Image (cartoon, rainbow, N blue to C red; front, side, top):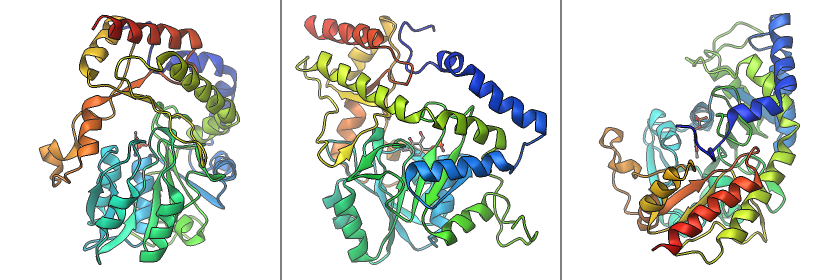
Length: 369
Ligand SMILES: Cc1ncc(COP(=O)(O)O)c(C=O)c1O
């Protein structure tokens, strides 16, 4: 279906940046630079500088960034790792694939880890915390890092949705032992397919992730140090990501102005709860603009009929998917969120006129009820 207002617009994005993207690809193909070449090293340097860490290691997804970071932290069978119930399944799968037990806690109204619930969930087996900075908003990292220090827990940040977001002047991905990023095309910095990165200040973590992503091999010596994986960030992807990274500050500024427009147009409409939270310590990058309403399904259907594409992150709680074999963590806030949230169209290409059309539809929906 062709939407009047698409959730994101990859075709428009490509047309806008065609010459830079084409040049980056052409250069790689012309030189035969396909795997582990200078373009990857350059991107890793640029990305680490942007996030504010010493190292960045490119991998093929945020899932693998999480998995490798947990392995680098020594997480394994018998360990518990605390994360949130309200996240994408990959956060939890990474814990499961290390042989550790995921412990899911509830979230606060800003969709991020409730730090009191975190502290209550700590047991002698807890080894690590994965805060998930959702929708472009960083968790309460001052309190969270203090708890981690007090209990000597490793912090691995799931920064899939928070590139460029900040808290007390530190960027997401620069707080914990490692930050785990996604370059899936829907993300603020999207690749041409899957991609991800680990950021860290710890040289040992950077080295272990570098080995794990390439079958455990040290490319200098040819020695295999682990049974690893095949999970590189491809060189062509890295070249394209470097070209795009230059635009990221402008794209984030645009996302924030789109969010402001949504706020302005939707204030006081129906029972809507808008994603406007304190920005005293936070700098929100608005990976998503998420509204809540008890009429979620009806509103979503109305928007679809009106040509507005929306997404729901995520309609069915993870533990209700039998195949995942997870215990019900008894998290009422997450359950309500699953019933009530809608993510509205938002990308670097979203025009303010599209926001106005979308918000007019939403106002009309509520005025008829
Ligand atoms: C919070 C969160 N964590 C992890 C991931 C996994 O990212 P990837 O698709 O790059 O593996 C996503 C992807 O949407 C996500 O939203």
